[in-house]
Length: 175
Image (tube, rainbow, N blue to C red):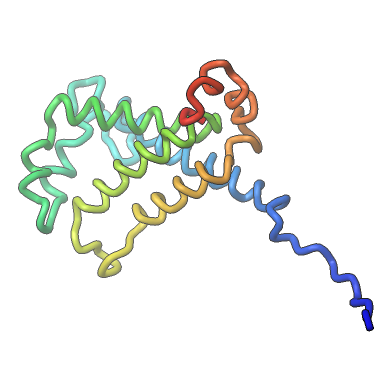
């Protein structure tokens, strides 16, 4: 005998509403990277004083990599601190991450590049200050991966348009 079951309300975990906090997280994380780029480039006075601005000859990597490192990878980070290739690679990466996340395009590439960057930033200070293993950089890694895999650029971003371009249709990994 088939007994009818009462109809339950549809759960909100089906993703329909989840796209909004993921879009907000994408934009906020993008602003985090974009602000770091702007502050280090122009010395806006938040974390970088004007006299240390990149455009005035300062190094965006010198201070922290030379004086803020500790742990098993200190010698490596000291050796690349302030090098032109380190500065350029770091600044290009945080600019590209900021723009990609804010615009909602290229999130897969951003997740890979940003993932490498934040894991390296995590490894600069081992063990982390407030926890034996986890700090905010690993949270950023998880968020970057989640944003890329959930196609979070379609809400409040250009991800839908970007996915339809001929370039991305030919190379879907650029989504």
